[in-house]
Length: 80
Figure 1 (cartoon, rainbow, N blue to C red):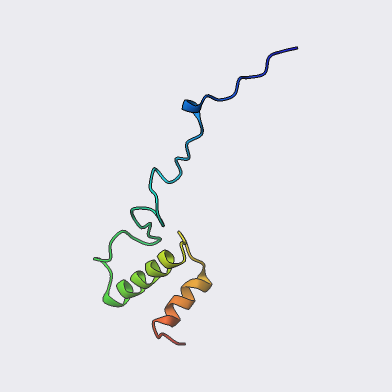
Figure 2: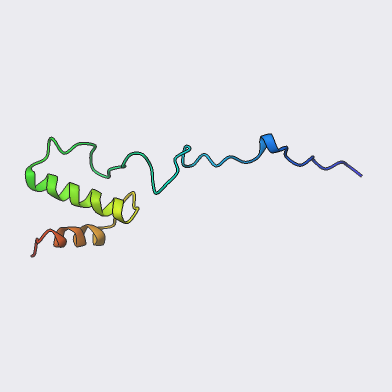
């Protein structure tokens, strides 16, 4: 009968690297859907971008749907 592979030694145990060693509630930096800076945006566009980034952080979302974006826009007081 062939020998089965030996169990993994403790020093070779599985290491979850998905968080890159970060512990706690989230990553060290935010990933933005649109840009890394608001400098080139108009004041209204910068307000929208900050609101969307805040929504994504609050809901732990990397990207948002059009429905979620509409909800953020309406939360800023915009109406049709």
